[in-house]
Length: 247
Image (tube, helix red, strand yellow):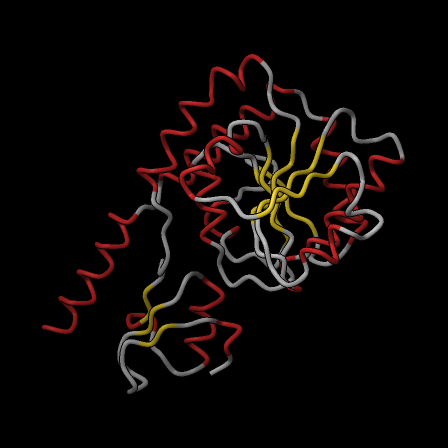
């Protein structure tokens, strides 16, 4: 079983239930011999009750002035694409195509120093905040506007759900599995080709060109999509599994 699919199997026998995140994992499970009725989707959920109030809390300030800051919340590891984000955004800035936008990173990891000290990582419009405690995150979310995750490998990504619920328009690479549920192209965000700097630069330019009203509408759409899945729905899936096992 390839780890890249990140499946959780509930039994060793191949006709017992298989639990995954979305369609990509379900397809792999079918290749392994699991029948459709034995495959359950939706393994992960954000804490919707915690993040949903943030969208309402930040709405007045965003209505007055939408924060022109891209936000990436991810560990500094090779698969998260921090350097690609820095390079793309710095080049858009230097070409005079970024307006008044900034780029903020939250997180830590093995590549943090390398990215921070790279030529583009030191760009004056890019801020590396470092590790932030969960109870302090709201102060950064309040002052940022668009969430970005540039992973080259991301079977799901609960962080996408969290920021969707909190009212963030989304920029996601096409390697992020959670886009399946939480991103509708041109409705609440945009996708770009994973690892492709030029594709990401084009996406940055599209967001910079949007009006604040467009950005707010995308944020509202993200919240609606995010609220459609919660721990309550996941609990229902678990109960279905328990009932199936008892049958």
